[in-house]
Picture 1: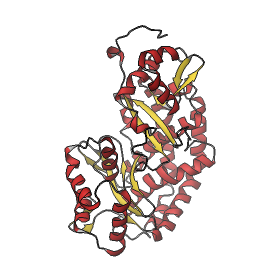
Picture 2: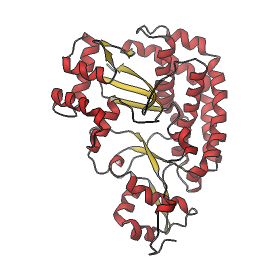
Picture 3: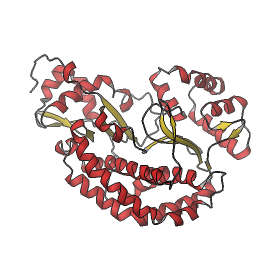
Picture 4: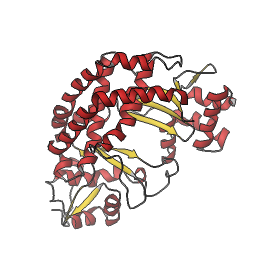
Length: 385
């Protein structure tokens, strides 16, 4: 129990990484005080460390309010990070601590090879479908974006949600819809939180999407990260030129105006010179030409066919695996009574991340490029209309 004791938190302080499964427009809500990106960070690490340190249901709610401030505790409760359980504080979202690493790897990673084996039996059918997308890039490069990103980190969530295997939504009292996931920063969990190919960065509206897919092992130099960093109003030096070009064109962080110009470029081949410079800076154009795969509305039918092949091949096995895992795995989040379907969402991220690594190692999809300090990823453009 905390009571009113003063403690030295430094020696047992844990650091956390915060991940969001957002169902809201990150740009429109960037300054909303209830947006978890506004209050999750180093200042909340000390609170979460205190709860992680003690056995479940023994971390005193009143003691935490006295120690860390009632406003901070209430914000974490309203944000779905913590929950009152009687007189105690417990975690209320999927949280993965150092001591969970061995169980996670043995329980989840072991299933990936078997899933990849099943998919490999269908690879000729998948390749034949993908080959009909004529965008100037190899089948392997297109399958990286389609299989690893659009299917596993896209349409498959809807399938698994319909099967009752995971949750993709949580409405908060603030009106924002999102899921939160916490990872302790440690070597044991790094390969699960940052090292797997399960991270989509998408700057998107109803016209098009500037996107990259890869791991989370660094700060990507892409449009999505650029806009998120601008929210913090502490833009690293390497993004300053991009900010100057953005301000020159749009007077600030105008996502819709930028994406409208990108859509016009894809449709007509024309755009303002400064917009071209911005796209070249982020690696979407080179020498005046778009140099990443572009997926047009007419490609959607082939992508949908690939989605159906994967669902028929893996759907039942994968949904059963997730339901079994979330109901039996011995990890911190389960002991704290976190919603099993929310836990399953992150278990699925880990699982399809390992599957994607298998697809790369078997050369079924292209290998993403390694960027020092940014991680592994590849970029593309998706037209939505």
